Image (cartoon, rainbow, N blue to C red; front, side, top):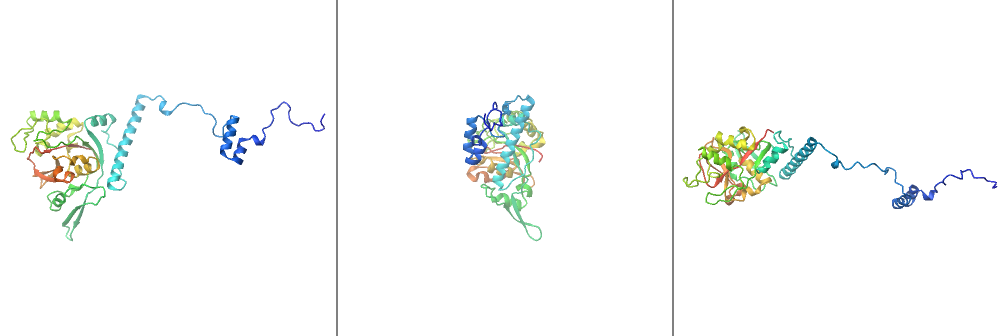
Length: 331
């Protein structure tokens, strides 16, 4: 018998040598060597203990209501992110935007987009710089300097504000969400040109049959197609029967529906729809000129595109001038 009997249990597993400890190896030689040691030993590093796999969150069973909520949240986030980025690029700074209007449910948004209607946000921004003399009289009205504002309204527009023929708010965005009619504006074709895939066509035919419109081309005599947006006077477009019929299609109350104002047409065109200035027809605007005796129109490619703006009598009609509608929501 050995004079130095072992103090360890001869039937126990031998203790691991320090040289075989992955953690110690890692401290001395590095992470790669530690990983290699653990692989050989079939062990995991602290915190890497196996966990039961319950599957990805997307694989969990969701109720129909929950799926609807997820889809709605995603749609809202995408729309708001799109608008914030577009406005940041145009104004050169972060723009605060409000929540989507309650009318904008996912089902309604999809219905609007199927007709070519799209939600956009316009901030309450004044796009004119106004100078006054000591007495307070306006001496100059100029467009604001914005690097991304490439196609500003012509000087004529700002001069009419200075001269009092257009109100001061003519160059100011009222702010809030708007529902924009994105139907492409066509090129002129003897007055018979049509807005493609026009969701308003059935309404226009109905209003023609009811005698609300008396459409005519530039000679004032030649009738235009009853589904055409051209040859209709501003007064006819403002007729309560017209507004009510269009509002029904948009799913909005009549007081929230109108034509675009010139500044809205211009800013939306610059930010989202530059093609509005690419065709040789114009569109009517809601702006009243000279105390309501006239209305503005613009957008003709041959005379300035998005920058072009002029006025016409409130009862005037032309085969060159169409229109697009706008839905408005409280800010």
